[in-house]
Image 1 (cartoon, rainbow, N blue to C red):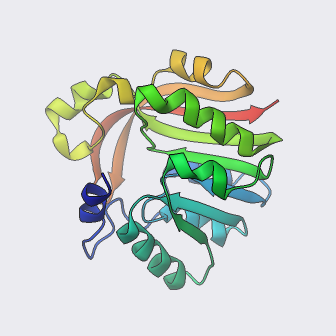
Image 2: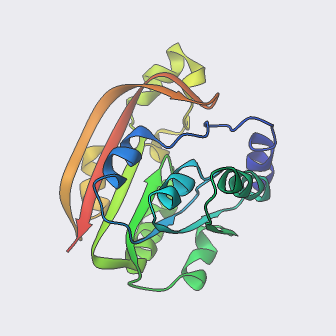
Image 3: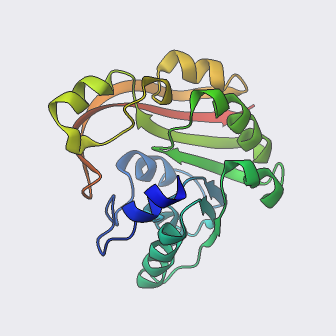
Length: 205
């Protein structure tokens, strides 16, 4: 798996662009700066944006190439981020419980068999009153992939999101926003075209 992502992130250009995700930006711009964790953060376009907004940023990904690109982007933008090359299995040992004011899951598509375990672990790192910010492809997105493969996303329906599964997976969270919508994506070469996504913003009770 590391090899696949190292290959994806090895190019000169940023796979999903250098700008933050639109939904993430929309939400983070409304919150006071604090401590944020970004799992599977890739080249850290969202982590770097958070740091520019005065957040203290921890990020991780399993790709060494992703970290190299992330650190270059941070330098380019004059900010500091803490970035570890680890996977979800190692995350619990690396981060402090009840510590983060926000955790962002932007196009983090986890195998169905591991999702409950990993979400439980992430929620243990989130403070009471802290936020989850999530955007990912919906189960209906497969239809959009068939029309345009450049829009990206997993081809395994079990790795895609639904609003019902979000409610089941995050029972500890107060739902502030939860919707499935069609959007036009322009995030580097990795996400280009019309797709169907789930957007979720929730607060830990």
